[in-house]
Image 1 (cartoon, rainbow, N blue to C red):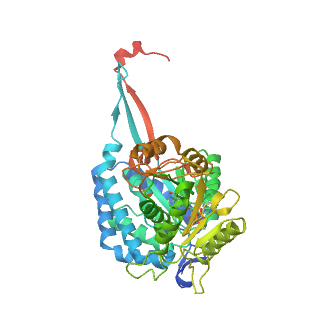
Image 2: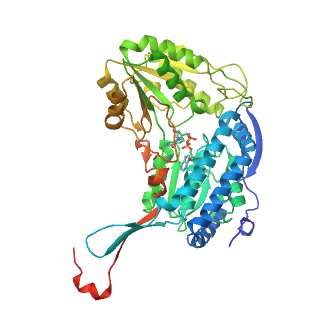
Image 3: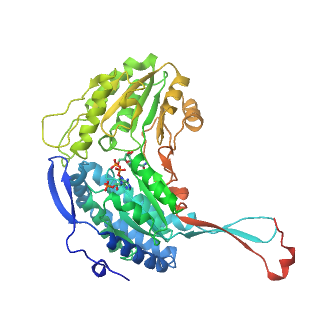
Length: 479
Ligand code: NAP
C-alpha cells in the first residue's frame, strides 16, 4: 500500500494556516497536498477499500467504537483546536466532540442492522436486497462544526465498508489532520481514510479521478453547484448538504416567553453559524410586539466573551471576512427598511467579533429576508395569520430546517408534517441533528440524507438479487 512518504513530493509547496478569529493572529502553518499526492492517495484508498469491504461488521464496529473512545479521551484538546481555528467556544467544542463519539457508537452498533440483507416476498423464487459499499468517497467539508460534519459522514461510510478522502475547509487544517489521526489510531487502515490539505480548486479534478466513486459536500450553494456539475459530468453519485434560512413560525396562541427562549437558542447555536440555525422568525402580528421584546431580552443574554472561558455564550465569528459580510447584510437590510432592535455594530476590538443582533420589519428585498445570514442575527418578519406565515416560510430558495412555535401541539404537528417545505421540522424545539433521524434538505439546501438508515444507504449499491434453482429456469418470466 502506498504511503504519503512514497508519493511524489514537489520541490516547493504551498502552505495553509489557520487564523485565530478571537485575535486575528495566524496559527501554525501546514504544507498543502499536491495534485499528484491527491491522485496517489485516491489510488491507495481504492486499493485499501478492496480489503476493507471484506471485513466483518464486527471488525469495523470495534474500530469505530475505538474512535469514539479516543474522541472522548481527547475532547479538551480537540475543543481547544476548534476554538483556535474557527472560534467556537470551548463548551460548544466539548459538546461537539461528545456528539461525534455518540454518533460513532450509534453507527458501530447499528450499521449491521441498517445494512442487513432484506428478503422480499415476490410470491415465488428467492428475492432479497443487499447493500454493498460503493468505494472511495470524497468528502468536502465546512469549518463550522469541524469535527461533527466529518464524523457525521465518516462513521456510517466506513461502517458500510467504504473508504474516504477528506478535503476539509482551508481554515481548519489542524482539525482535519486531528480527525485523520483519531481514525488511524482507532485502527482504520492508513490508506483507507486520508486527509488532503487541498485548495477547493482541486476538487473538480479529484471527483473525476477514476479511483473516486462518489462525493459528498457540506457547504454553500455555490460550492454545491460546482461539485454537482463535476460529479454529473462523470455520472458519479453526490450528496449535498447546503445552506439554509430556517423559518420558525410564531403563532398567535404561543407562550411568548417560552417561544423567545426556543427562538434565541435555535438562532445562536454555534454563534449563529449553523446551517440549521433558526434564521427567520415569522411572527403573527397579534403577538409581534411581545415577541420582539422577549426575543431581544433572550438575545441580550448572549454576551460576547472569551471563547476559552467556561460559560461564554458567544465567541467570535469564524473570520473577519465573514463578520464583514454579515455586517453588510445587516446594514443593507436596515437601509432597505429593517429596524435594529439589538446589536448591529462592529465592536472596536481586534478579531472577528459581532454582537447578538435582532432585526425587525424584515421583508422581501432585504438580505436578512432573501439570503442566508450565517451569524448571530435574528430576523423578525410579520405575518397576518398562520396561512400567511406558511407562505412566507416556503417562499425561500432554501428548505433545510424549520420550526413551529404554538401551544396547540396538533396544529404544530400538522404544519410541520404537511405544510413546511424543509427536510427537518421541529415543533416547540430548537433545530438539531441526531444520528437516529435523517438529516438533509430540499430545494437549494441540497439533496440526499445523512444519519439514520437513509444516510448510511447513500453510499451503497442497493442491489436486487433473485435466486432460483436452475431446474426451475423454464418458469422464468420475461417482464
Ligand atoms: P463553502 O465555502 O462552500 O466551503 C465548504 C467546503 O467546500 C470547504 O471545504 C471549501 O473549501 C469547499 N469549497 C468551496 N468552494 C468550492 C468549490 N467551488 N468547489 C469545491 N469545493 C469548494 O462553505 P462555507 O461558507 O465555508 O460554510 C458555510 C456554508 O455551509 C453555509 O451555507 C452553511 O449553511 C453550509 N452548511 C451546511 C450544512 C448542512 O448540513 N446542510 C452544515 C454546515 C454548513 P475551502 O475552504 O478550501 O474553500
